[in-house]
Image (cartoon, rainbow, N blue to C red; front, side, top):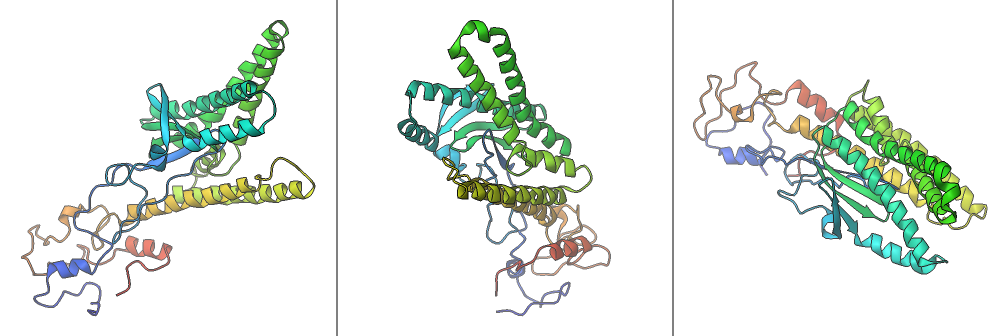
Length: 363
């Protein structure tokens, strides 16, 4: 094991540049460009949280990359396409099909009525997702697809910019669609209910109920629901994105704790039919932590995306050049001049102080 040299001291004569680079596993001279991050925002009954971060050995962890150098997301391997809406592929996850089949065997009554109710729900969820997707397109965000799964719907998009306006409008579009549809259903009941008969009344009421339920539930101020993103957009008006995310996650976890306590109280009092209710706040708690982790990793990569020893904003191609702009001889250390940047800048040190833990593997 070679002893570490003090920061800024030149290496011993004859030491290879390749050896010096191996001592700094957090940087690489020409790292491959990252493709746009995919942000999975499940809407409908629940949000699907962002996929886990991809950590490349020897580099600072970065948010998940796209298909270019990594396998496609989980939903692509386990879902099948059923159609297209506004040029957006619509997919169904196989677990959703299994859930429907199980419920058909357990729910009493006609399977036809059950399937019609499921069809109404899927229509409401799809329109909710399309509300998000079409607004996102107006801001130049690419929509990958919409997938139905047991906890609702997921609209996969390219990375949404850290803008309170953009995220707020994209997030609120889904519940707004549901409330508009509920209003349309109420008007239809008033105008056509008396003449249409009981069947129309029953399905129109179901349509209104589903839309109101989806709209209200998705406004819960917790990730991964739309309310959590709306809350972050509100906080981001006066705080940076990371701080706004931390504040929104804290509020969401408070809501999750209250929901967990309420669900336990309901079950202990003899409530039936909702034995899985405590899992919802647990899901919210984990999803909030995952969202915060992704934002922290993204901001860490923004700070450390340049080689250490260069000033913020200095092009990477200029790193290691002599003060006069020429390249140093192979095997010779570059000349160091005061004010040109050597070692860590003040910004690098402040960033390191924000993150605890080992930043390089043990020798």
